[in-house]
Image (cartoon, rainbow, N blue to C red):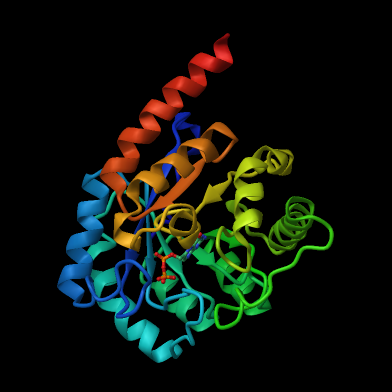
Amino acid sequence: MPVKKLDHKSGRTLICGVLNITPDSFSDGGRYLSPEAAAERALELEAQGADLIDIGAESSRPGSAGVSAAEELARLLGPLRAIVKKLRVPVSIDTCKPEVAAACLAEGADLINDITSFTDENMIRVTAAAGAGAIVMHMQGRPRDMQAAPAYAGGVVPEIHAFLAERAAALKRAGVNDIILDPGIGFGKTLQDNLDLMAGLARFKDLGLPLLVGVSRKSFIGALFPSEPAARLPGTIAACTVCVMNGADIVRVHDVREAAQAMAVADALKKAGAAK
Ligand code: HH2
């Protein structure tokens, strides 16, 4: 099956819709655990305007312990098989395990989204061998302990810029050509780190690769305005809009319909501003 590519030339902000097939994701855990519910949700996200569907089966919320590869695959493969031929848009698999990535790529997944930034050589190898794309995210520490004491002696933006530049070079050397960079909002970052990264996104544009940000429903929104994760859509839209004005190309969101409308407005305003 040929790998589906993201259409980066559309000039629009692309929408990556989140599908978590987990019992414990921080904002939507347990909702799409059955293969039928998961497959239906993926098709619904596409119909709502998603340009990419990101499917995960292991929660990475702060403090989470992780699941086995067998458990991850048991959650992923049924829904993936059910949707992969029906979807027009590409599918990314949110995993850090090479064996999970390889099995999903063999079933027709198009990209690997690795929150551990392809530091496992096997992850690079299986992604390159499939001709698949890569979403490379920065994380300091691991979900179990990443929020204990995040610290960036060299400044959060320069440190993560250097890190992503190095990871992109390693992936390119191994033959992975479609690379998307992600500063990893909420992954081993203080509130101020998250704000500095979103405000400083333009700094990453010189890397010449598409930028994705995952701000949807995250705890920095709750820190700024106390609210449950499912009630953080307004904060999500505000953050996505500012990120897009600062250079984000793709937003990873749970609420695709709402984000698609907001990003259409943000894109039009950005274009009008650029023409002045
Ligand atoms: N955020 C989450 C998971 N995967 N991948 C990328 N590239 N960027 C992100 O910001 C990102 C990600 C966390 O959100 P969610 O998937 O909704 O929650 P959980 O990890 O609890 O399943």
